[in-house]
Image 1: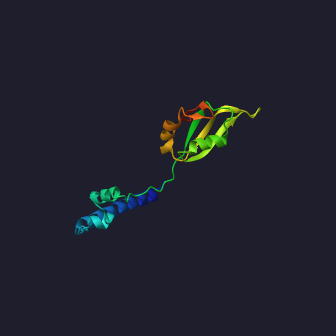
Image 2 (image 1 turned 90 degrees about the vertical axis):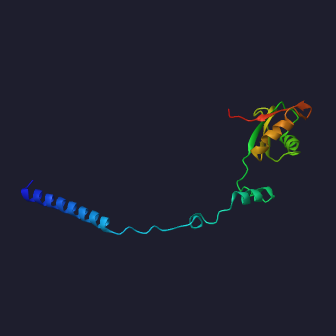
Image 3 (image 1 turned 90 degrees about the horizontal axis):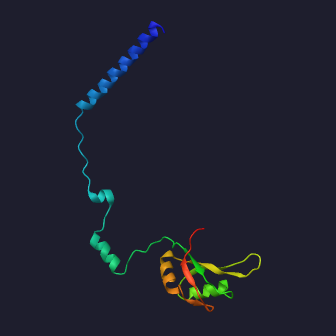
Length: 151
């Protein structure tokens, strides 16, 4: 490395340091800026009070949720050999909204395996379905209804 390049590098470093000090001095000499005065309404807009929101909720003008209901799958056991998907659907649709009702059959023989699955439209209704239809009678048999689990 030559002396010339070393000296040039040191001069450049010293110039950067002088520039940094000059900028620092300029910031110190500046007058402080006046703080901007803002209101709550200008930041968040018009906010309703808690009383207004509660009055709206309890006056029957409740805000409805736009999210779609989440279905729930139920296991139905102890089915009769004569039970079909249609009769299973009819039994459950008497009181509840059902998406699907399926009786599981044997692949080889096509005979019922005496259990099936029912998909309830809204998972919030699943417990009510279980409470009302567990141990109810369908095609002469007392059926078992519970939440389906993964294998």
